[in-house]
Image 1 (spheres, helix red, strand yellow):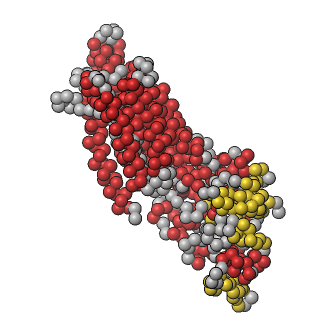
Image 2 (image 1 turned 60 degrees about the vertical axis):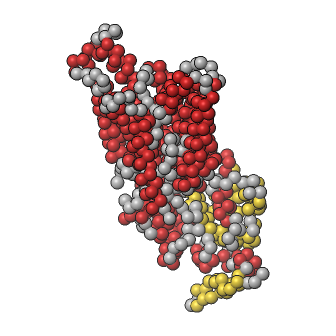
Image 3 (image 1 turned 180 degrees about the horizontal axis):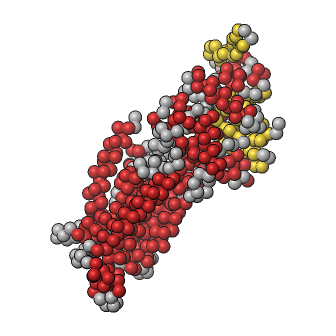
Length: 333
Length: 260
């Protein structure tokens, strides 16, 4: 039975769903747009307030949700394939924390100057460091608990670096701002953020997609993958650099939004028939849908201060993670 | 007969120790060569180096006369297929998906399975009698079924060299014989087969030649009857062996341990 048409049908379904969610996300918000207002926003003069709301606020925000959600799902799936472990996720394993501390340190120390790319550069450097340290700490064929422990250690280490920077900073207002940014959010992000993050997210995503066949080979173990023609060094380079570029840039823009890389591939593994390469594509689409929908949710519900996206995904993701962990513990001897 | 795979004074170092030290061997198209020797004698390391997985510290491995490190990985993967000891599968894949992974060296980045790939997968599954399991999940099969699926995966590239590490490990006598018959069948189709084996009697009966490895070096090589003499078995395994048989069928059987 050829499962290929079925797979592309699933991809098409997810893309349609993504388009629908994006359309909805553009329409709803503090002001709900009617069809007539939509037409006005699209065709009206440049200083039309509706046009400004749609083009300067909602479109970039939805676009960032798609990009960042997509890349978080994709990198989660890639890390799971690479480490052969369904608990891998940039947040759980400390890559996001590395990116956050890198961005915070770049912000406070000014090593990259005041350039606009300072934050993403710091984020990517931090993510790269975490992604390189992780296999060193956990070993390449890490058991579930070793991997989670390594992630715990990295999260603690990079969390300490971030709090150190906050601790030493003389400016309490800047601290508040950084604290809120760390919680993870897409509020008040504009086209400049899209422009800043897009090249790195695209480049990182490309590297991760190119790693697809090697991840397939890795499902039969390291040695067999090499015997099938996939060099270990090349695969590691693709996954580590791809994750660092894409997650680093994503975190630098949005702060830490956790657990998407864990939840989304898990939900879609059945649709991918366990195939790590197909899971990459499905998880990218699924992550984009998930984050765009979650961001729409925090914009629509009005309970005092806006809920931060990272808080919402953590509230959903942490119990999910515990459930997955206990199931794996029962399955493994 | 031409030698497809050849090793010249192959040395592999692991943890500062020469696990394989100066082994020369060749495998020809159409023959089954058995690599035997006690635990820790370097069999798996040796076959790993032949498969291009372990980098030799000295000597070289030649595929069709070309040094392996000058053969592109994909080209090497099409020519040499390798089945490790205790083959793993980390995701809940179906039998057909696992066998299809054997075609990876023939496929492009996002290209699907071509008609040639699909036919090769069907042939491999038919040969190993796993076609009726095609849609079953590999992690829910019995040990014997699983090993047959993994062998089908190794045969799916339709390689010129087949390297298998203990393919009869953990199988009942019926499945052991089945696997050995399949190796013979692959050889008769022109494949060069090298198998690491622990069962001396299977090695004696199904291999054209045997290589006896002892402490990383070749202790003996040649026709099974020449290699499996009591003296060699005693030296390599510290075991006294006897030849048993009736009706013109006889085989060597390890009988008791020799005190050192």
